[in-house]
Image 1 (cartoon, rainbow, N blue to C red):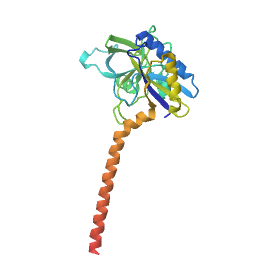
Image 2 (cartoon, rainbow, N blue to C red; image 1 turned 90 degrees about the vertical axis):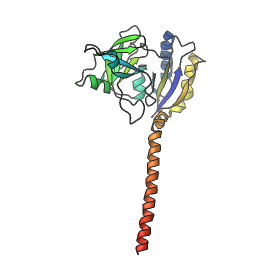
Image 3 (cartoon, one colour; image 1 turned 30 degrees about the vertical axis):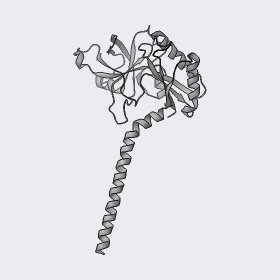
Image 4 (cartoon, rainbow, N blue to C red; image 1 turned 90 degrees about the horizontal axis):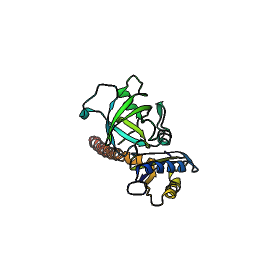
Length: 252
């Protein structure tokens, strides 16, 4: 509740260059954070409950090497430093990302609780190192924090291992802004769009909606099945009641 989400694609425009992407989102999130009624602002390449999206295989550095085809798979999320605060995803160990985690600084990642428990069942994931398979080659990064799990596809889906990388170190062509507000999220929709357009009037902002709408869409299938089952149960109860009444009435 209280989160506004909007997708900002950077492909094909003046912000499509890698260096410009990083600077653009740093400026945008900084400007939006100063708006009245904004508690926190961040961005991610794939929102929870919207699909698995980008994934990558990985290996724990310092442990026996496994065949490339047998490496475990994790969801790969590229985020800005304020994302966890905006979505209220709890930090369980270590530290969150900071503005100092840039392309020039040593590579770092955060992992979710599912990944930490699977590969460090006794704790101690912070300080470990992962070798993540990317299109440009392996990226070795230190784990600096562990955060709570989120659902990628649906509320009742399995918890996927997830690796969170700083956007400055792993920029993607599009991010979804996440803005936590004091009041109704849509009340700030025009202000958020305005800040984006002040930096680039030609930059589109798509799918601007409250996060509650994303949750409702994810629950739509389960709610429909529940309503359908309740309807069938109601009809069955009515038929049984009429039948029992008829038999007893006839006997009387």
